[in-house]
Length: 178
Image (cartoon, rainbow, N blue to C red; front, side, top):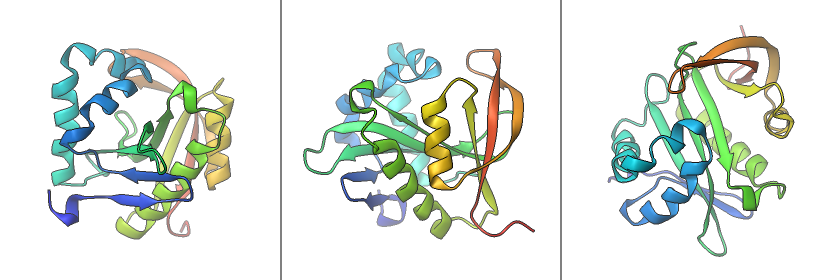
């Protein structure tokens, strides 16, 4: 992988970076974070390799970019951040997940803020969205802390689960809105 396809974001306590071949065991710990990822357990290595293959294009407009969130001091995985095209809205979306054992320590806010600054410097897009289920107050707080603006609520399809859920729809403006 060339340097152009490697992301390394350092914050006070974290390193947010592209996964490499040596990260598979740590990546597997993330498979319980989401329903869609849980479905990937039988093909975990293939799913991991798919994420690695996405680094070739670094495309958050019509593709997917998933980065690992690691504790700087220990190198242990704490979660992931991602930017990708939203399945239904076809807008770039930002998301994150922190392992249950690491929640409540501000890691999501720290990783999100650092990653959003990197996205703003790398991509020429006016905004990126965030969607959070109505009852997920901690994630709503993370987005609001990072400067996302609540736009409205929407009923959206989670394609991999074939279920519709109500979400708060946020936007983070990378450049001033026109």
